Length: 76
Image 1 (spheres, rainbow, N blue to C red):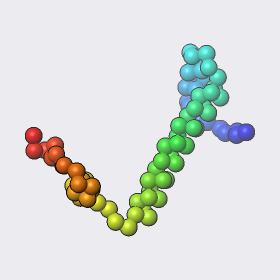
Image 2: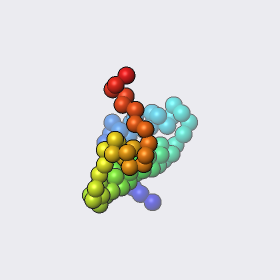
Image 3: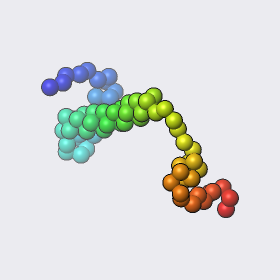
Image 4: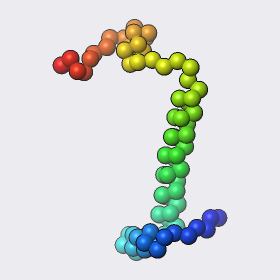
């Protein structure tokens, strides 16, 4: 269980949304936390991978290493 205080304007917006949609404030608070948490986890994971990567490659280098044809989108 989590208890938190929201600024009055945010709580009012949450109340308004819940009333207009017939959902609970808890539903929207839970949804917002889950989505924000997923985003924060993605950012953390990306930062971790960037810190741990020893070598980076350009797209062109990756295509060459994989033996794939590279089409330059700027050359059209």
